[in-house]
Amino acid sequence: MNLFHYPHRRFNALTGEWILVSPQRTNRPWQGSVEEAPEEKIPPYDPKCYLCPGNERAGGVKNPKYKKTFVFTNDFSTLLEDTPAQSLEEKNIFKANAERGKCKVICFSPRHDLTLALMENADIKEVIDVWINQCKESEEEDFINYIQIFENRGPMMGCSNPHPHGQIWSSETVPVLPTLEGLRQKEYYEEHSCCLLCNYLALELDKRER
Image (cartoon, rainbow, N blue to C red):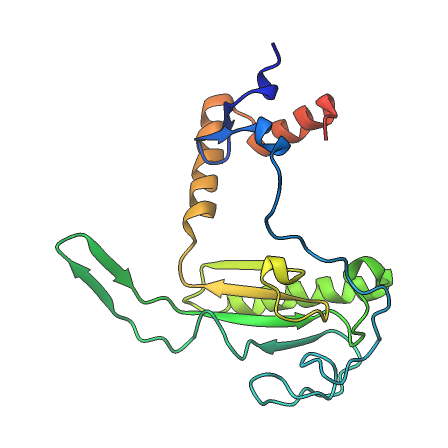
């Protein structure tokens, strides 16, 4: 019997959770969302794109005619720097704390059709340099304790614009999952005197299953 052909639980070493996996469900008929293939030909500039150089953004601000990587504060930020400090608690059940932070948008290139995978090495380095500089800038803020750089691509992933771009979120508190993963790695090291992620990588490379 092959365990991985049947329902089973798998241990997530980074969180300590046991996750239910049901591989047999991949055989079921699928009538859910299907993402359409992207357009074969994407123009280098789209006059309707609110991230292209010189165009007006959704918030009404006009982009400069930028030639390289362009950074701006998200017009519809999830986090705000000027959020007033306040909290709420009712009967030790309903709890809420105000959260401050910053959200930046990074347009990798003025080209509407260039993803990171298609950019020249020198241009990719410039994007990385922007990441570094933005992180250093956020680190200078006393209230920032966590920085996350990420990219969503495609409407299925919640991306609202096809122009290649990413985001940097800087927040006042460290989110739950990174906190938990950090604690798990610390516990693993204290118990085994070695690095959890290093051992995980070595095992993956040895098994060569994916």
